[in-house]
Image: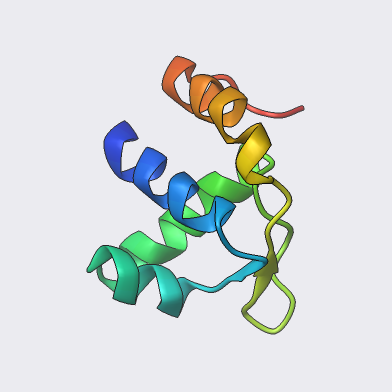
Length: 79
């Protein structure tokens, strides 16, 4: 997965309150496996919650997005 695709996914989720793999598939035009990998990466970066019935809550606001994108680009993960 490219950092650019992860950044695009992060920008997408920041404008929402919930996200699912199927939503990522539709919006980013990726397959299920790639969407699941993106969901896992977004969770690892602290942008979304652990899924509940396939849907994750978005934990980042549009105001917090620039800092989150900087962390993604630098490869820094939430601890």
